[in-house]
Length: 195
Image: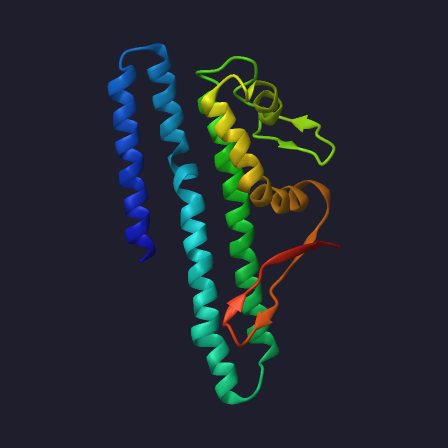
């Protein structure tokens, strides 16, 4: 299942790359963009890949490991700890790869927009409205451009929620990712807390 979806992502990436090749063939921007897209291929596919791995790991936990523990009537602490560790690793991989993909998008956009460096990170907007990285440019120019406005809207709809846990883990303090178990629903609720 993962390989099929991954192949679909690769095919979609190749279609996008081919479409871009037709539109800007022969220009300096085309050459730069082609090189960036080749570099970006892993980053484009990785979030989907790690999301699918997380889903598969969660499914294995409930459909195999949890059922085995329930049938035995005994919770094997070591097995449960290892299962939760697997889940935490998959969440961590997913969060890091979402952020890495966003940072790569900045590099691509730097070919078409002026006012930020290609090496800028995607950045964020603090609670007090202060901006960092590419989001400084987005906040300033969002009313002038449809794509920049789209990025600004999506930042507030989902990007900040996907990036915040990763930023906390990488920059500020260790986080505990808890997996409260609801045995009635067979679902995991993923949350995080500062230590």
